[in-house]
Image 1 (cartoon, helix red, strand yellow):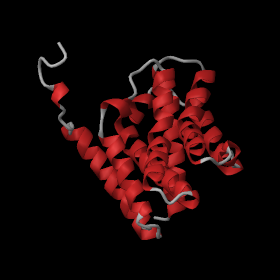
Image 2: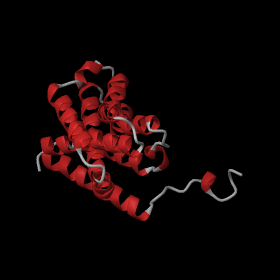
Image 3: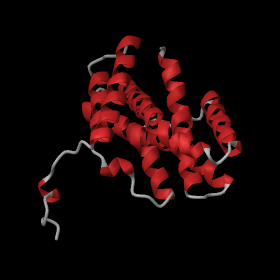
Amino acid sequence: MSWMVLHIIGIIAYAASGAFVALAARYSFIGVYVLGLTTSFGGAVIRNLIIGIPISGIWDRFTILTVLITLTIIVLLPIRWIHHWKRWGLFFDSIGLASFAIQGALSAKQVHDSLGVIVLASMFTGVGGGMVRDLLAGRKPLALKEEIHAVLTMFCAVCIWLDWTNPIELTLMVIVVVVSRMFAIRYQWRIPLPCHRKGKLS
């Protein structure tokens, strides 16, 4: 599977993720477009601010058209499709997390060689849009409750920093991220902190 195909799947997955969150919250079609666009582009806006490149660079015609077509199709779908998305949404959302995190790291790598900057760019590109989406929907951001998101974006950033950038290596990173996140959700993997122990916050 080529990197472009994975990237398109990621764009569609993040647009659909925002749209279905809006539908679950019973927002109007305007809300569907706002949350879909926010999820697709919110992380890239934060990334560009971090690495100091123009925000206008994220508005390429192909990406915008892909997002708008995806959102329009979802607006016209029967409501029962929300249940199908709940079944498969996490899988495609994981592909989106991987492709966006890698894209953020690659963008930062072009202008900075600092691992810290690459990690921040990867993290905010991967989870930034979803965090803004959840806040607009009145939900606790999933990325702040589950450490696996940050850990996987850091994994992608380190790999890009080490120049793992050929198509096979990029595809392998996506597979690792998707499989790891699905297992983390299935088995509720968490990183134990002292403050999480019973009675610590009482």
